[in-house]
Amino acid sequence: MMRGDSALQPKPAGYERSMVIKMSLYEDIVNGKEKLSLVGLGYVGMPIAVAFARKVRVVGFDLNAAKIDLYRSGVDPTNEVGDDVIKNTSVEFTADPSRLKEAKFHIVAVPTPVNDDHTPDLSPVEGASRILGQNLTRGSIVVFESTVYPGVTEDVCVPILEKESGLKCGVDFKIGYSPERINPGDKVHRLETITKIVSGMDAETLDEIAQVYELVVAAGVYRAESIKVAEAAKVIENSQRDINIAFMNELSIIFNKMGIDTKAVLAAAGTKWNFLNFQPGLVGGHCIGVDPYYLTYKAEQLGYHSQIILSGRRINDDMGKYVAENLVKNLIKADIPVKSAKVAILGFTFKENCPDTRNTKIIDIYKELKEYGITAQVTDDNADAQEAQRLYGITFVPMKDIRECDAVILAVAHEAYRSLRREDLDALYADNGRRKVLTDLKGILDKEEYTDAGYLYWRL
Image (tube, rainbow, N blue to C red):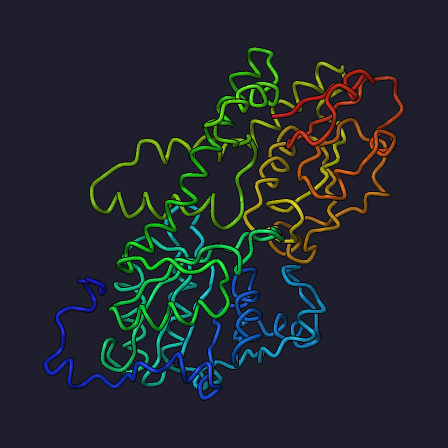
């Protein structure tokens, strides 16, 4: 059965006879009679809007007027598609919600973060549903892409859409869910090259949604049997990655105590055909470090307390503190006074080659070092400096101005850092005769080169 069984049941009297939607919306969109809208133009929504604009008429809406001004002036603050693409796209960028009335097929791609207590924060998707509901017209299809736990689309979003619009789901408009799979900063795995999961409240809606997405997704679509199945598929994808990375982080902790290099162990184990190629590291961003909490929250509501998922989350959430503690130990080994130590942190984004600093775990290292009385300077030319200042109160220091350090943390594997030479790093340290303490979180440097040069080198 394609539709959900909660907010959408029971069917109203005369359901089949009262259907207003003509299942030719796909043709109307392709022929330019109707527009498609994107609600939320961040790292996910904007590339989707640009992709569809190559085929159909698109309204791109975001509440952030400053962001809309950047897009209109041909600037891509996300670096996902580039300034040239933004300058030449036909997307009608707007911060005016009434423009949504011009579209009949709506895609909602807003973030779904967690609160400080790790419970889901549905306020962005609820807010988007309210705005869209106030501008929803009969005959529309609404597709949510935001990562949620199973049931949110039907149990949370639909009632809001109905209340704000005065329309009835299944009679005046229809809904679907198609989880986003865009990987920020990844130029290989893009919207067009990743199989797209699609779902709809009934078979007809599923057909319409599938056909629309097939316009831009060269890899094709996978038709999930229900909206809840599609929601669940998305939330477990990143939960699985989180658990596997947690296992690698735990191995790193164990091997560190044994005096064994984790990277060397993984290289050896990786020679087996079915060994999974995961690496230890900090787990930040809006997906891997967040999605598992959506799943465990829903499980708790149903009376089940997660064993594996939450254990993995605890390990990954503590890795920033673990990194800081090991740097302090190496400062002590190098006879460098901890309280007055000066440390440079190279990289602040949640992942490499991406300007996004939201939910970065580098901040955990920074805060922990501060607890020890250590002065940390942060540099990152890739990062959104204004965002880092607003969210964390951190002002970046140009790398050319970083000197006289006691330790360096190579925190993010940006391409610019991969090309650093030893003399580039040498220039960052104080010339005090003590060993240079270097933490290479992602293991991008040649360990042997630096240890042979007298560095106190450490990596996960």
